[in-house]
Amino acid sequence: MGIIKKLPVYAEKVPGGGIVTTSLEMVLNQARARSLWYLLFGTACCAIELMCTGASRYDFDRLGMIFRATPRQSDVILTAGTITTKMAPRLRRLYDQMSEPRYVIAMGGCTINGGPFYYDSYSVEKGIDHIIPVDIHIPGCPPRPESLLEGCLHLQEKIKKEKLSDWQEK
Amino acid sequence: MTKEQLQTAITEKLGDKMTLLDTGRHDLMYEVKRENLLEVCKTLKDDESLAFDYYLNSHGVDTKEKFEVVYNLASIIHKTRIDFKVILPYDSAEIESVQTIWPGANWFEREMWELYGINVLNHDNLTRFLLADDWDKGFPMRKDWDAPGFIRMPEL
Amino acid sequence: MSAYLAIPIFIIAGTAIVLITFTIARLIRPSNPYPKKTVTYECAEEPIGDSWIKFNPHFYIFALIFVIFDVEIVFLFPWAVVFGQLGLFALIEMVLFIAILFYGLFYAWKKGVLKWV
Image (cartoon, rainbow over the protein chains, first blue to last red):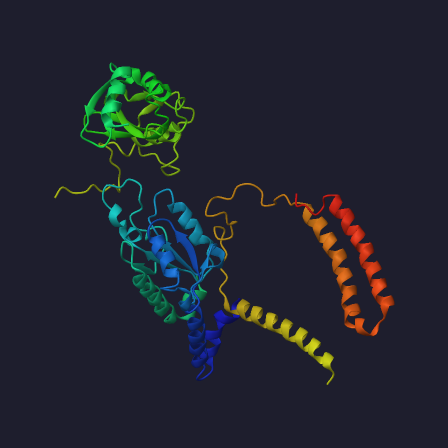
């Protein structure tokens, strides 16, 4: 809708009107960061750690993150697991079907550069950077739940620093 | 059934077709020639003292000089296992399908064809199903396979 | 202030909350549809086949029976409220009413309608 895209333009014209834009940004960013719903995308062993982090001892729900089974209702895609050449077009399609604003957390070594499958593997995509744009990389094989929670907290920090134009445009 | 009993039973029934290679491992390892394969498999399954009715696995091996096809079977009644291999040279890598004897062999042979290029005769559906949809880069598990993006482990 | 004032307040408040939140969301959210995004979701595969699926007509029959007995319950509630002040006549009349409707239920039961096909 047009109104919020044009708000900064009109707010600049009024003296002291910038405060409207910044406080609106702050409110919206804080709201968005604290309620990231992630797409359940576990392909391999990192999915076990993902499930473990979502369970009761290290909880995802206290960060506001609930799992969704469909990309239409999710903000974040947590790619937990190895992506093979056969899976890559499906991952791209899922990312395309998410609505903006959308983020990607690449969990585990396999999604960073192929991980343990960097050598001698004929069918593993060495890193998902060339398939979808990644915001946060979490190293580990698999990363401990504390690592995963820290990665999600980093993503929250990243969202809180965003400007309106970042997620209103493409 | 212990290994020695199994060894005697095999020598009795199929002594001329299966040659013993190795007894040091957990299961016995035999070698079978390609022309005797179907007959040996039928005997292994139908005979009461052997009764290998549970087909576990078959996979290809590419040593640098030849292909081998290794079969793993188990017998539920006698509680024993056996392995045997068929050695195929590089230029005639063909083998008959054992899916008429054990129907579970269907997908394992398909995988063998897809990754190694070992042609399986009398198989009803030899198509690609493990690799990517538009795979056109050959048979990846062969030792001489290479493709852009394939990084071999460097010798240390 | 009559006690019935609560009803229009609830209706107005309920509608207003929904309208306000949807309007705010509509103003704030970015909208950027492109063809790859709007394709039907089929677990990340290319969608094949029709999206109209066959619908079991037994749902309709169940809904029909539900409506009939729901209307019966609507009649039962006010009767139950003033039951103390009415006499034996009201009891017999309601028993007859329920018996007539039970006859209909019995007929449906024997016809096999209550079994989910």
